[in-house]
Amino acid sequence: QVQLVESGGGLVQAGGSLRLSCAASGRTFSNNAMGWFRQAPGKEHEFVAAISWSGGTTVYADSVKGRFTISRDNVKNTMYLQMNSLKPEDTAVYYCAAARTLLPTSKRYEYPYWGQGTQVTVSS
Image 1: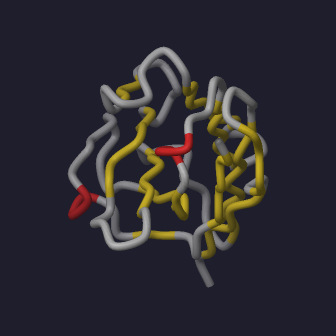
Image 2: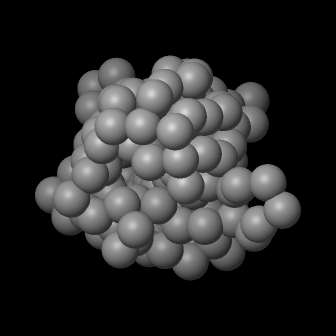
């Protein structure tokens, strides 16, 4: 059974940092791009960041560029999202996903595998 499990969410004050992890099991995703999306209350899923199969190419949403860093460890079958300078508007459930592509994509329909999400709350 293929599973993506997020961890590392929590409550943090504005300006603080969190590091999310996404551990994959059931199959390797070393040949798949992976990404992070988020959904705030009452809003649609929003693309956050994505990384290529090798980790050599990354893309970010403008709203997080310069503050968030996506990375992956294919030996551990794990992806990360380092979030710095957090803002209240970053509050959301964060989802990791594995794409059917090699290169990173912001298109949600390119991601057939999804985790259950982890809550990130940033207080002002």
